Length: 276
Length: 287
Image 1 (spheres, one colour):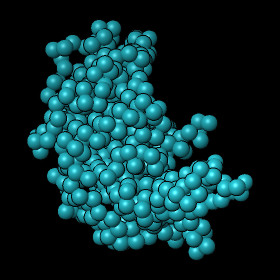
Image 2: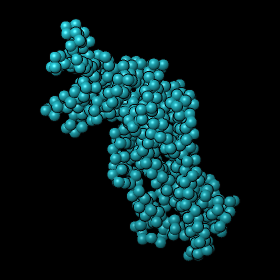
Image 3: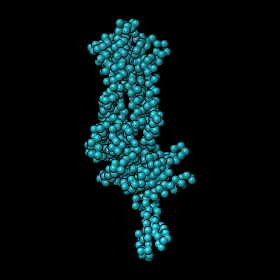
Image 4: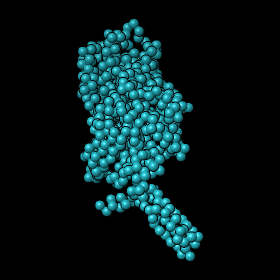
């Protein structure tokens, strides 16, 4: 129990760090930039519905930011291995467990903060949203499954990648995945095979789940099959979550076991060479 | 507290530790002394449980570090060669947080007491990355002892210190061993530091132990003889002797004040250490 408490404490301290000082600007930039884009697009019409493009995109974007939690975890894990934070955790009793709990808290809270930054002003500037219309239970379970699914996947990737440079390169396939995930335009506009690829990953389902929670039911008309497909959403996100929860501890344990002072020193040397 | 028997470590085809054996008792400060690349860090990382060994028997607090559990880990303190972690954290915040992990083992130290002990009271609310090198190192030691360890590992603890910081650091380690009965194993390539801090010195060179004993015993064991130089009737003399004082006394008794230009050079442990390391390197190269 104390380990969980330590993890929570770490998460809250790191959250404060990432929303104060210089980091605040970096953390506010993307949600605000997205908000501006949505604002500019808010009146553009979409075939098959009376809702503006901004209204359709905003919920999907929330889903996208949940999925970006995956990249955040990867960045944390690779950076913390480079500077020795993870090794420090290893030198402390129950430290690695506490560290990982802390990371999940930090990233989940960061994601929730992004969502609040998007949602609160978003509802004001984009038509068609009312607090009373939001299906909160749907929002809650989609969010929960989404956070677990994407962050456990992120933890696995973060443990397998060797350096923060690898983490940087990872953003390319993830952005590609987001591009085909139906967040910015309906997935049914894509070629058949891409449609299937998109549906294999959590990003699409996060977007769909968020739309189902925030948009009126009539908006489901533009989705595949013309419905919100809650069952499928729960099944796919749930499958990713379960697989992640099974595999992540194994991979993370292996990663932690391999940490040593010489390894941290080695990596630092490589980083310096790259910079120098 | 620490027992190492026939420890071997092999990377690929290269052996970096050959048959290393030594012991450390409770409250003892043992220095692993040796030039860079002697295998000091590898040895200490095996003892910390961070690295698997190739062969040999190793126990720390009665447990094989390769199978040490969290309860075992709670009784150790680890200070590695260099840490850059938790740069954005504040000093007190970090110590309180890390101390929390030891609370369930009933070992955590009060953060303020700890900060005072390592002399960081003025920096308590400063960000870790803004500390100077010496302050950062003292924070590392504070983290190493936040769980009141029974065994403390220090890897090159004072590398990059100025003399003042070094002195303060030595006092801190001394206090730990004296007042808390902490067993300390430290690595250093600085003989002076080893002499000052350690009750016992284990000299490692080329992955082998080439000497092991108290500072005094080591001096007796490996130090050469004193050198006495003088002139008598315009002629120079040099004599190597174990008992230079006695020799000089006899010299004067025999020749009275016709002895001139007397010089006595005590053999230093430092010369002996350098000679020892050089010898080990030569024999290593010949092998």
